[in-house]
Every structure is written in C-alpha cells, then in structure tokens.
Amino acid sequence: MRRRIHPAAVASGAVVLGAGALYLTGLLVTGDEAPSGTTVRGVDLGGLSQPEAKEKLDRELAATATAPLTVTVGDRTDRLDPAAAGLRLDTEETASRAVRSSYDPFTVIGDLFTSRGGAVDPVLAMDEDATRAALRGLAEKHDRKVREGAVSFSEGAAKAVRPVTGQTLDIDGSVDPVRDAYFAENLGRIELPVEEKEPRIGKAETDRALREFARPAMSAPVTLTTGEGRVTIDPATFGDHLTMRPDDRQRLVPRLDEKGLYKDPAVAASVRAVTTEPVDATLRVVGERVEVAQDGKPGQKVTAEALGKAVLPLLTGSGPERIGKVDTVLSQPELTRAKVAEMGMTEKVSSFTANFERAEYRTKNIGRAAELINGSTVLPGETWSFNDTVGERTTENGFVDGIIILDGKYTKAGGGGVSTVATAMFNAIFFAGVKPVEYGAHSFYIERYPEGREATVAWGSLDLKFTNDSGKALYIATEATDTSVTVTFLGTKKYDAVEASKGPRTNVQEPKKLPGAKKDCQPQTPLEGFDVTVERIFIDGGKEVKREPFNTRYTPRDEVTCD
Image (cartoon, helix red, strand yellow):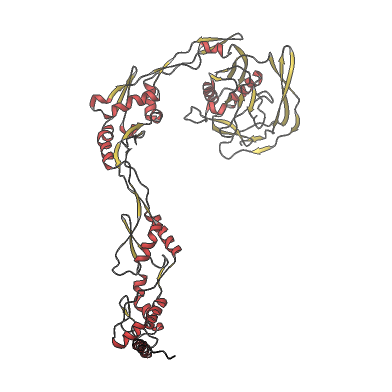
C-alpha cells in the first residue's frame, strides 16, 4: 500500500533543508573565527581566530587583569594582588569560547544577515588555596582584639584608655566576594565580611570613672596620722599601686594594691618613722645558766591592710578631707621571757673565744660582724648562714678594707679579719654538737687558730652554715673587744660534753719563696703545708657515744718578701 506524504511534512522538510543550507553557507562564510561584533570586556574579537583572539586579550586586558583589588576589612582599607591571591584571566579559554560561539546555528545563520556579534564573559581561573593564604595575610594585618576602656595612672596623673572594637576577618566568607569581584565591571572597593566584638567598657564609662574618681584621686597628696606622727603619700607614689577594674555591672571601680603600697620604699620609710619596732628580750649567762636580762617590749605596727583601708576613702576628698587616721596594732617581739623558757634556752651550750692582734681594720670588721650576728635565734631544724646574717662586706654595710688570703697570698679586700669571727663561730658549732652544713678552712695554716678547727668565709663562694639538730632553740650571743671575739650558744645541751682530739701532721710539704705583688705587696713568713684530722667526740651519760672526723689539708704558706 502506498503512503501519502502530508503537505505540512513536505513543508517542514523544506525548512530543515533550508536552515541546513543556510548553516553550511554561514560556516563557509565565517570560517573558524569569532563572529563579527564579538567582545570581551569591550575588546572586539570579531573576525579573529582563536590564537589571534588570545593574543589580543593578553595585550589589551593585561593591565586590568593584574590591577590590585581594593578591599576593606572593617574600618581599614588595603590592596590585594590578584596573582598572589591565585586569580588570573584565562585568555586561552576565553578566546576559545569566543570562537566556539561561531558554531552556534543561530549565530552562524545570523551572521549571514547581520554584522553584530555578542559580548562574551571572561573566563577566570582561581587557586582557592592561594586565595585563602592571601586572606590570612590580610587577617594578620587587620584583625584586632577588642580593647576594653580603662583608666591608667602614671607619674601622678590619670588618663583614659580608649576602648577599641575588635574585628576578625571571615576568611571562609571572603573567598566568594573576592572571586566575584575580580574582573567585574564597575568594580569599586570589595567589602570583606568581618566579625566585630564590641568592648564591654565603653567611652561613656571611662569618662565617668575619670571624672568621678581618677582625676580627684590624683589631685593632691593624702596624709595619714598615727599617735606618733604623720605619713604623707604623694599621687605619684600611690598612683603606682592604683588601678580601676570593672565590677559585675561593668562599672570601673578603684583597686589599691595595699601590699605593694606598704612595701614601696617611699611609704615604708615614712611608716617606720611613725611606728615603734618591738624589742626582743636580752639574755645573759650567769655561770652556766641563762637569764633574761631585760624582757621584750611590744611595738606599734601599721599593717598593709590598715594602710589600704585608710588611703582609699581619702582619694575622692579635697582639702582637709584628704587627711585621715590609720589604725595601728600591737607588734609582739619574737623573744620574750615566756618564750625563752618555752624554747628551751636555759643554759650555755658552747662558747669559744678567738684572739687576734690589734689592728684598726680587724677591730672594725670583727666588731661589725659580731654586732650583726648577736641575738640570732635558730629554731630546731633551721639552718643558719654566716653570709646571710652578716651580709656582703661592703662599705655600705659597715666594713672596711683589710688583709685576706687570695690565691695563696695575703692581699687587701673588704671585710678583712671577719674570718676570726667565722673561726669562733665554727668552734661554737663544733662544741655545741650541732650539724655543720658548709664550711672551709683557710688555704694555709694561721698560727693563732687551732689546727683543723678554724674557718673562713668569702662572699658569693664560701659560707659557714649549720643546722640546729639539737631539738631546742639556740640563741647566739657575741661579744667583741679590740683583740678578741667570743661566740656563745645558749639553749639546751643535747650531749653532756663534746670534746676534740687532734691527730699528727701528715703529708708535710715545704714552702717556696715567691716574689711579691708589684702593687700593695703584703709580706708573709714561710710555713709548711700539711694534713691534719680532728675528731669530734660526743659524750653522754659518762660514755663516748660517737666520733666524727674533720679532715683538713693546708697548702704551704710560701715566703713573700716585698723588697
């Protein structure tokens, strides 16, 4: 059976055949080129092949593609380098799209009847990792922490600390705006998203704190009164210990570092002048027993807490309102008649006298060291230190230059002669039977001291220390004359007696003869070097209970002449 072809189908076929003919004709006419009128951001690519279009885009849009992007991060403006941010114009793909659009049937056929093409969007390439890295760089420059409003005090003046809003760049939220803005038409500043944090203490509160407290506080000194006198503190001094901190309602309130103010040298000296120090009981030995010669006396003391309590209310006053009373409390002495008996200081435990040849520097230095040691109380288990008690042998501490031993020779230095006190102290330690912790003999033997039972000290390198392991407190009494110093330990004897036994000299070494120093030469007579052992013998209940050896090596005392 024969099929009939509908006239409409014939017509449709004819249209298709006609369109195809037109498309083929358009291809022959336009070839492998961008349609006429094709543009990319105003650059005409019509009639250009893909390589030609790419070359023109590279040439015409290079400046635009590499121009820095202006960005704002909160209230700050910066520039972003597209290359560093991983952004670039893909001119090859853009040219390819411009040319490929010529294969679109409508474009091909349209080009047969018109000379106008269309605008092609540029193709952009983006390295997101590089973009994020560039944004992190912006964040490092422009992020800031929130700063609370505050009031500061310096050199007797008060000033407000301006509050600052904190801002943090939203890096994740900034990637798309940067990409969208790159190569956009009519591009202005790119506003990057930031997270802001407002300060809790704003300008209004800092202004109020400055007006109501800080400026009145710094307006004049304050004066405190006690029964003994007055203490005046200037704004520069108390301002160093004054701050303002927010309370629970975010209001700035004053805080005074009372301990810091109390320890401030300018305040401490003035407070001492209007208070009285407690006086310890003084002891004396009558036979072998200890008596209280004079009982201790309490003093009047200003505490750090009382100082702060008195000062703070005065700071907002004016005129007479800046004068107020500071409370004092009784300050008890460490040593009283009752405590002497309680601490077991009832008898003479040991005593030793070291003699020396009269010399002005010896009398001065030995007397000063004895003065600083006298009255030391060492509780059970405590360790006593010569250097900590006497301090550095300087002019400011009351010492003068004298003869010491340095590198095997006599020379001059501050505190010469105090080793005589150290020797007396070492023997008092020895015969009290308490535990030596650190000690050292002279490098060569000095005839006026007992062999193996003497000590020297040097600031910063050699100390004389003992630990009170007697079980009772020890009181150290010292007395110095022009030619002797005596150290006595008062307490409770742990042993009936402590004795010393010295062995013979061994490893004897003869001295040499050395030239003296060119400056400040000190002559010295020769003496052999030797080893010696002294035993400490403990006797209790009429029997020897133990022995402790003390070994000493003396180097030869070389002869030095100062011809």
